[in-house]
Length: 256
Image: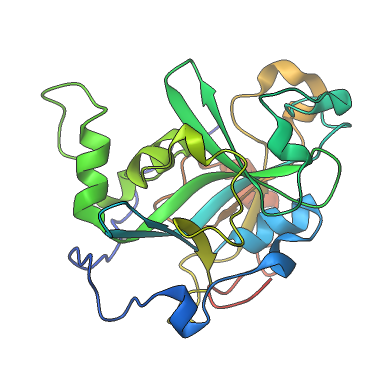
């Protein structure tokens, strides 16, 4: 893979945890419901792009980030999936629950990843990266608490640019496993209130990250990200050259 080039920082505004722009999803109809999640895994992974993941903490603080990168895990046939071969365990039970169920699992015993179930037996979408939109100061505190002392300050595009970073920045705990993203009071998905085009020049389909041991499934283009977006965790230049970016482009205000 080509070396990642330095890209321009996001034109993000200053932190505003009580922004008048952001209201509750119940009031403004932004929240996406059951129908959104009830679609095939690959379609859902693409549909997530440009949508806004919202998190209300116990103290009422609201954190929001736009989804810019996802991965699809197709269930039984997918050798890289936790549900490969139809295997059901206590750990992956959420993958077999109704679409919109949150699946949170740990990696290396310390980091967490957030997934959402879709149509298909044992299928789910991994949320890989977000563009911070609201609550950046709190996100920075949450991320800094998990980093080594003396580490350099994080840039805003580094707050949520990876699956475990995303969980840290939005304070997604292990206990959110099996909760319902379509109906939960503490975490939900929204359309972008501004209805603007999401940054980037289209959707790139690339190989998933960190699954090299899974043979042919390691190369399948089941990771999707917004082309040119500075919050994408891993850029695949070859995939970008091969992806027809005029197809599959997304708008942040779309429902699907």
